[in-house]
Image (spheres, rainbow, N blue to C red):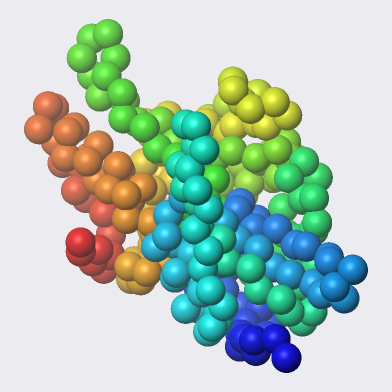
Length: 242
């Protein structure tokens, strides 16, 4: 007899902030595995941040083991959660997660109130933020979403235009990854994106702290250098403490 693991197989039945966040993360760093030779169907999620995988495990009430894979060359060690569940597999198929989704996935239908949490989940999986200095010494913020599906990024941008007031649109081929694309936003749009992705009362476990901190560090830098009050962009109800 094999080891029996438990998981909440109804997790994706009802929309919630946590469900939307996990779904977004799975669109970024998750996959479905149909192991017909074992008559098993698996949900896999992997990332270099153990904290994110552990949070997803807890939200799913999973007793499965998180496995660490070794670092190879310049690649960091990764953490894998692999859950065998026909029910979760089929739920995620209905929600738009498909096997071999990287280059073909389409943006899912998400109730309006949960879209910020889905976007933040995707960002924590396949997004990044950078602070750079211009030639004049000014501080510049760049936010990036990455995907192998150009269609996914185009639809994401349309939602951000409508919901967050994003105005720019810079979709580029990824410089170092063949077949991948990047959606890039600069300072003003990055600020709007921050306000949208981190709404008031966002639970600390539903965000990746190191990415959140890049935005707040940018706000601090701008306040010190230009005397502009940037802290106004951080929602007063968002209390994230390290």
